[in-house]
Length: 183
Image 1 (cartoon, rainbow, N blue to C red):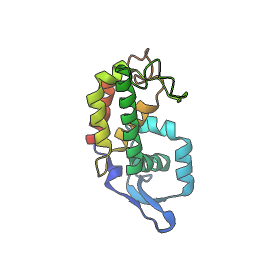
Image 2 (cartoon, rainbow, N blue to C red; image 1 turned 90 degrees about the vertical axis):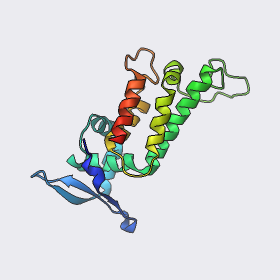
Image 3 (cartoon, one colour; image 1 turned 135 degrees about the vertical axis):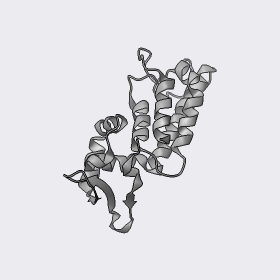
């Protein structure tokens, strides 16, 4: 499925205006300026909008989804997500070798806060996670759905990255996100 939203997204520095394509009442795409209020709402509703985008909602459906898609698909956001994936990989792989994220950290590490990750699953999915991070930072437009899927993967505390009881297959989810980014 082609993401029409990424076909056009204008962002100019002049007066910090952002224009997006949105569907009108007749289902036609029209150019509309996002107001600051639209961007604020998108930030406040980020978790819900990310779920909707990850499930395949089209960003041009409404201003909230469009504003969230603009933010998610920005190169800055994609780089941050790729860095998060790399940190999770490092934590998972280092922990599986008894490195700094091991169960008994060295005494010199002074209570560094961290979220426990499922090292066994991360080590089994390391190749796919590395590939996903690489796709995120490739130049050019990407579908908002794929980036939202990565966000969901990283932020779902009950998901396979973090919770032993999760029945979701981490490798399958990562492959789905990669597929969504490249289609």
